[in-house]
Image (cartoon, rainbow, N blue to C red):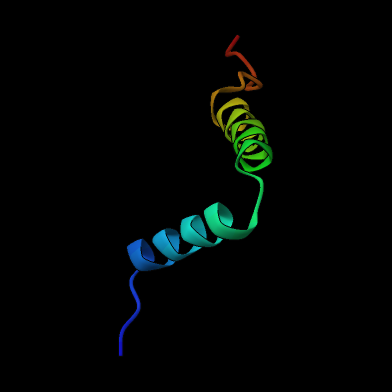
Length: 49
């Protein structure tokens, strides 16, 4: 039996909806996405001279 990434995401989402607080999960997820975006788009490169 093979488990795909999509099935894992659906399973985690169902577990949060059944047993977790959805608003709390939404806040944590948005904070995590902001951290990821700032990591990728942060301009900390040295400029050429």
